[in-house]
Image (cartoon, rainbow, N blue to C red; front, side, top):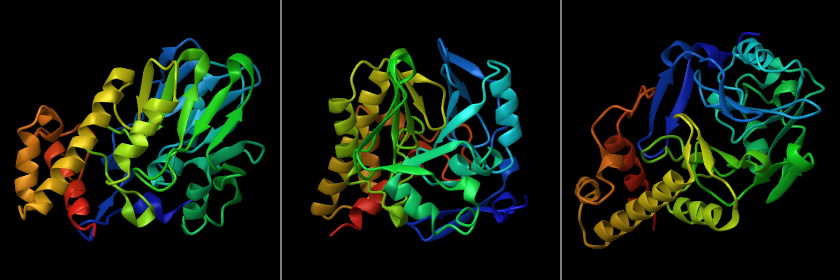
Length: 299
């Protein structure tokens, strides 16, 4: 099916009012499937990282990339198992994470947070496509499967959007963080859909306090990393908020706040070096400035 999102996917930068058109060919190509641990794999490229968890009954898939990637995802899944995809979990509502939902049979159980479903229900690209819409939602926590096949879904509050799900695979000690932790830089905060740079550090702190026995983290867009890197990422976002609030209170500018953050121990998060795969606001400095500007706009 042809969708407008295939021609020009629009990312709304709420802090600036700018709209940036992105086409699928601007994203990195879908990559080969990579083993994370045991029966858990990741497929990078063409949007967010897709996790593939092979259970005894079938495959639990996290995030479906841009539209038009369904068959490519299925081909990569088929390279590691003959079992069908039985569950799709979307970490949030953005087009590069839900775009190929419709490629999977109607028998597949699509699961999201309740706030994510509410946003998808207003999206003309998906709302009238039954296979693309969630079948089930959760509020704070949901368990799918049992024993070594168990998958735990958590919601801790506003962050990248208002409906970000954290997906934990206890048997392989791994968590998919979606775009709350997309790369080693400030995440894009979609405040038009409930995201908040003010709530973000608290949400991340809640993850660190509540989720146990996880060693590896699948970020939204960069290679698999460690729990320790998530801890550091949380500290960085807390420092960004603290720096922005202090600068605003002292009458300093947004750019002065950015420079103060660049002088902190988190300078590498605010670098001018291009972040691979980002076609707009493609450096840590630009991403940090966007979130600091949002903090400045808070009453």
